[in-house]
Length: 171
Image (cartoon, rainbow, N blue to C red; front, side):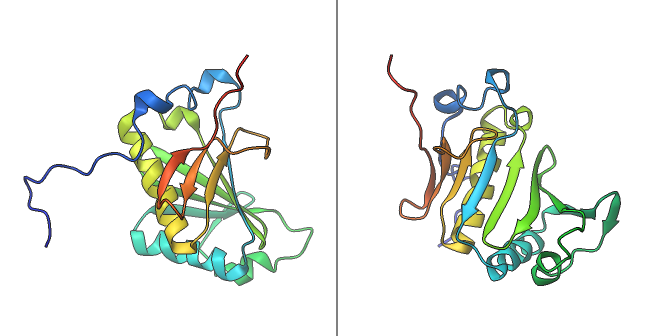
């Protein structure tokens, strides 16, 4: 059974008022890092396929050259001294994720907190993380910029949703 046009929109995974403090760009780093561990070239290819299947806008580049999107195996087998390729993905016009092909065993990308302000854009982020996590069957954690100590937000496969993963220390 499908919902009709007058059906209520699904409830957001997270409410902006509950997580705005975590996504405040004035609180430090503005580009939280996403690290999906224990991946393979096949996982990278699954993400590339997802980008195309979803019809998300994207731009693949090596240095200053914009190129057609290659397969993951070709990107990950480039010479060690080659420039690191970037894949910019826009799951919505105002929200961009920048993937860097550093190694096959970890998928990493970042997003700009400046682009994630408000409920609508938070919903875009949650949908994006969920789509990737479901495709890979793996957690998709966000870390404060430049750290990998503890994620603050992320998709958890067991819960099949994006959740807050960090609480500030009491003190």
